[in-house]
Image 1 (cartoon, rainbow, N blue to C red):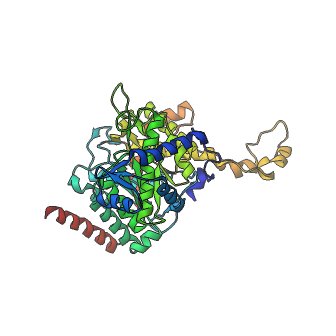
Image 2: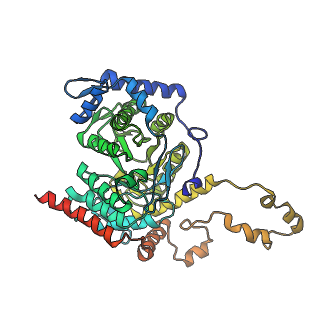
Length: 483
């Protein structure tokens, strides 16, 4: 299975952690104090009522004070592993421990066209192309929309996106819906593919990335999506995403405590709504606004603190890497992508998304995604390890070769040379070979790889009947929006 190429370590057994047990406990205690002593604002009456019936105190209309006993109870019933399946029903993403899976992000407002280098507005064909590329790249485990298409009704773009993605990949899908209706459409499409609601619950092929304003403020739309998914027994990715210095404290300890309070609230709500409902929580640090530029950077080095807390709960996590604040595919983009990917793997993030992001999440690049795929392949080779036995130690072969000869002509070399990692994009030849191939830098080679995939890769199609069912769901949403 794909994940064993990265790691199959038990949680916190060998991964890096920034925080000591004492520090984690202090942040956890602070999160509990935020939940009960300060309170969290919930802009959905159904969620407020659910917590109130369970024993939470409500003041000022919708300021909810969640007692620690509800957190303890929820953490005792929430699943410690969540598995996502491919379209054929294979368990390709068993999330838990320190197993790492990689994929793109969603809804960038711009795209750098790999053919021209032009930064432009995306269209729906870019979503189709992106899903096709992800389907072909061997180290991309799941698919997201990557860009926000501008040639369709933007209020319905999420439904158009999921139709395009489901038709052009067999891999698991992570959606971002703008309203709960879009999520319902996506679930209906997935149910049509796998054979109904119960089949999807048993083998989910998709989940939804739910962003809420911050750990202390939870918008109605995010709460509706969480309750919808947990009610159906489907996995939800619930991510409070504050900006340190703006919607949470500037200090990372404080910002992490605030966002972690929101994480715990999501876990509590999911378990109150349906005990045992699967949920995936944040391993993404709150973004600290760059006070020099007022930009929220993506490729910052202050990573892993949320993961250090979340891994103690033992719940699958959602993380961010393969990103860059560079505006183009250049040396900075490659360096930041490599650094963030390696760090997240060492930290043991489970779902690692946003590969291919540039410009602090505003621009997407298929070329950058192809480079990230090569970086992940390198990291997998690093974690792969080696066999140590009589065959690999090769002492008998050494005796036959002798002191003054080489191993180049031996059967042993011919048998094992393919076991060494060989890159597809990174250049290893000598200078004259590189010149003979056109003297192309990495970005140019990656762009060529992207175009080769689009020219030759044809994802396994859905049946005509299922394609028609999915099309009808889209048409119904369009018709409803017009009435």
